[in-house]
Length: 217
Length: 355
Image 1 (cartoon, rainbow over the protein chains, first blue to last red):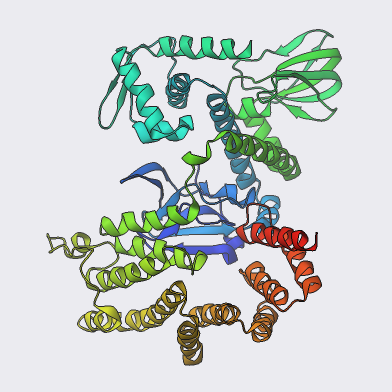
Image 2: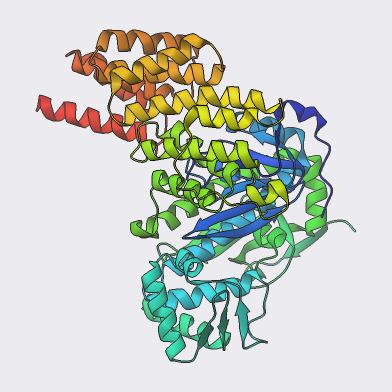
């Protein structure tokens, strides 16, 4: 990981959080984004009765950046894992920051590229009409995110659960459970409390492709 | 290594959709088209690259398979950059990146909207309930500092929301636990298995909370003092949620007059003006909000302040003034802003009455 660039000229935008502090809550309206200078930040979502860890970010990383695009509610909760120092940016001071610091601008550019790709991938899942195809496609997406070459492996262990799958597939938890139960009955997957084993990921790839082709007609 | 100049003949292909390669290209001369199928419409799209424009940036820098096929329409000259070479060039010329950031942020906004429209509404949680549930989760798991944060944010956004009364009580509980065990709960505070308080135990109220704090080190007293103001504020908000506006007004006034914590004093002043509206004292309500807006022209709740002024005018029968203000509010934020939506609804209702 590249070291955090020297941003002392932006000190007036510096904010600090104590270990354990919530930086922002999911569902809160947001108009600021952050660049971590020191300490780690955990990103979580509360799904039902569990707090799911989405990611842990380190100095030099950016979070909350969707706020400069849309005044939409925050999509996750962020918590300071250590005492955290961060630069806080808004739409107003965003341009100043970009012009003055190409390293951050590049970082943000790459982040946008990743977000666009992720959203497009999600969109592809949501265009599938068949619920089971959507769930199967979520498995394919998870495999891609882990850079697993699906053509060279069969069985894959996914650290995921029904709530998570439902979120990505854009269908209710009950619909997701029904689809997963059907896959279990067909012996295509194994359901465990903390993980799901897909026995033949290529079989899912063929299934999703045929559904997509069928829809195009 | 430096970027290399490459010549392509008409009708040749620079890359195919699905190819994996890291090259980023800059068109110097000729004519190149990016061909792809639009995911939304299913239509084949041909995007012409302008001279001096980069292409293949997303797939090159992001190391994703190419999303388009690039077809050379006329003999063309391009510069091919490795990601490192591109970054070097961009670092010297920030304008290249800011320009791309604008393009990409537009693309991101567009795809984000497309995704949102496909999401079934029942899978989406209403933000008010969502925020409340986060507070509940942390309270249940004895992470009192985090519970307090979430609940307090709730009251900032939804001071008269449907959970406001409940939230106020839970803040009292959580604050008591924080003063007893620290923000991270009993286990973290003592390092041994401390008796875990049941979160549904009756709250000790403000006096209980400060008594607990006084038993500890003196530096805690300041926190207790601060939280007394917070306490008073949340009690007043609770009165609002019970629609006891006269009592709430008095309680907020007390906070304002005590002149303690500036943040709470300002919030109290705002809530007082809202109470005046509910008490049908429209002239005083308009005056109070005008004074607040004059004092804080960039007040974070400016739209809400204007909304109450507009409603006061409407109640007074000054439809033109009310309509003008509602219209102004609708220009101040996007359609996803709840106040904008309420202003739009009010406008529609006014038009309905006219017709």
